[in-house]
Image (cartoon, rainbow, N blue to C red; front, side, top):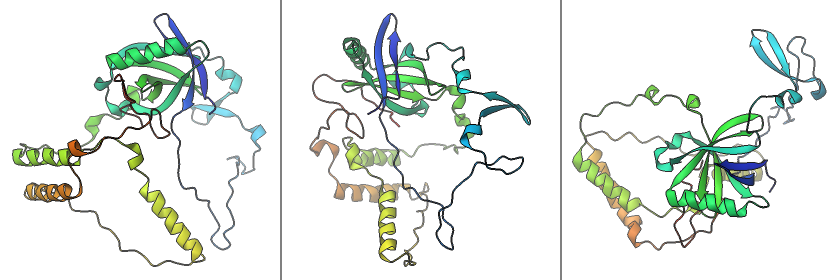
Length: 296
């Protein structure tokens, strides 16, 4: 796996040479735009707004519009002149309790790999973060952009998780949530029981993209049918919301169904997953380590 960044983590006077590797991969079904009459592929051209002429890549530059219709051109060498310290370092500014950080701030995880001479300091930082259940808040410049980031202990690894700056988060008070006068204690108790019955040990391999799988099956059927129209399936309607009157009844039915299909979490056989699997790192025997609770 090729690293996307090389530099060092620093906290206090400790410096750890590291490189950053992708921890996630984006998988989606890709569709091409086609002309309806003959299924000819559609290509997009780069054309100038003023005359509609196609522009080759060599004649394209980056411009920032500082006033309406007025641009300043920025070349690649200009970005090297940006007066910003720490472009090759992950400088930890603070250590904070991970539980105190709203998960909405976390964005995208990367694996941190120690480079030559950094293994001991890497292990020290990983272990102290796990023992204290804290994360290191840092800033890092990746691909000409500065990010807020968290350095986390994750099994045998350190993980760098990019974060949103406060200015990038839409204020929560813009979301309208109707006030509830009082909590229905009976419903709350039954809801707790339902959560307990449905509780399970986290296993990332248990979950998959059902929609993508169903779309692929549909594509295969259309290929077999020579592209002909397939019979439509019955349209599904979203269930009506549960109101206060029938909420207890709905919970009772949910408890009955859940109890019939799954045993309580305490009766399940626990399974262990290897550390840093392809889909997510987990804990591995022995001493308790910090886990990557908020990975995106």
